[in-house]
Image (cartoon, rainbow, N blue to C red; front, side, top):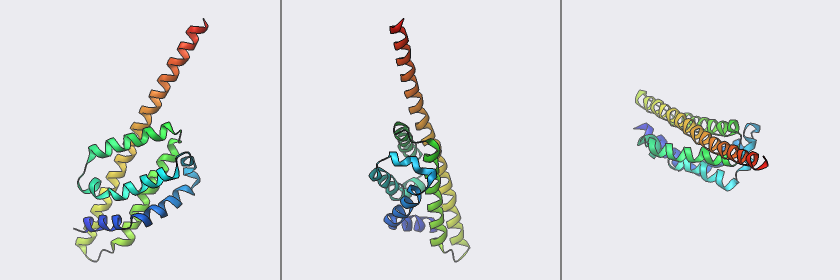
Length: 161
């Protein structure tokens, strides 16, 4: 199956893809708020996506995607990264992978083209889940932080009266 071959190709180019994506994201004003995240953490997350792509795409491990990306959304909220910058980084990652697949797919017949299209659909679904679960985690953290701040403010008001 071509989709499996393309995923393996992606995984075999982890370092190059991670480096190229990191430069693209870090140099984008749409992602400038990611400077609040340690560079080593960003590099680790980028490699993680490529390294685990076959598990996430081919095994359809939605529970793992939910857990991992809800946690990541919470972490970015704790780091006060603007959500729009975080979303743009995810979109950039998706486009970076899609461009790589298109460039390297080299479909020579209808079956290979079908496999490449199948992989593109799987990528789209995966990144849709990533966007959703990061939003869930981000919102959960913001709601938790907001509730804590409201409690503190209420406590302070009660003490001052």
